[in-house]
Length: 267
Image 1 (tube, rainbow, N blue to C red):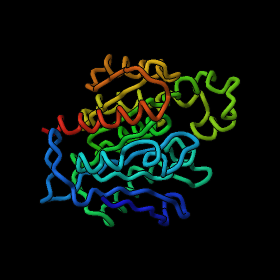
Image 2 (tube, rainbow, N blue to C red; image 1 turned 135 degrees about the vertical axis):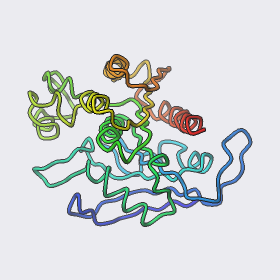
Image 3 (spheres, rainbow, N blue to C red; image 1 turned 30 degrees about the horizontal axis):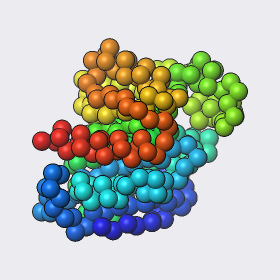
């Protein structure tokens, strides 16, 4: 197992940025788990942190280093700041392009990972869950699977103006800057429902989606809403609920379940 703390210049952000890379070198055989393939390149999972987080969150809050070794997957955790992993044209800070294009190219150049779509996954928690769904759908030709845990699927509420009301963590100006004018959100490329519907209508290749949320999580209702929407439009996906709050305990449990799902669906 090798862990790298990497700083590199991003053309998407026009500055230096950081990433944690977990490369499962010297994978042992573990009974009951998929047998590692040591003859080829590693599949890759681009794993996104939540609001107010950092690129080190996943390795500090979960067993992701151990799980990367157990499941034979290279994991890359970029720094997303509080961007919701969207392109900020006003600041010329294009986090969507960073995730969907530049980071893919950079990591494939630097590490022994597969260039195949079927071996390339994206995941995240909270803000990162939204970022995984949005960019997984936006860059559908890049990512084959999406893992979205306790996703901050707040675009409907931002469009209605309810997310901005009495929010102790984020100012109203932040939402407008990040997502654009509320009246323009629905149907745009920051709207996961619109992106999913567009893929269905165009009969384009679609990433498989795994969603999970805790039953005590304040984001449960918005996750149920997207699940219902995907079901109605006929977008096959996995949706799970289980006991838990918006916490690392839940995310640690369900990132392992999601990696098992990837292993099973790849058979």
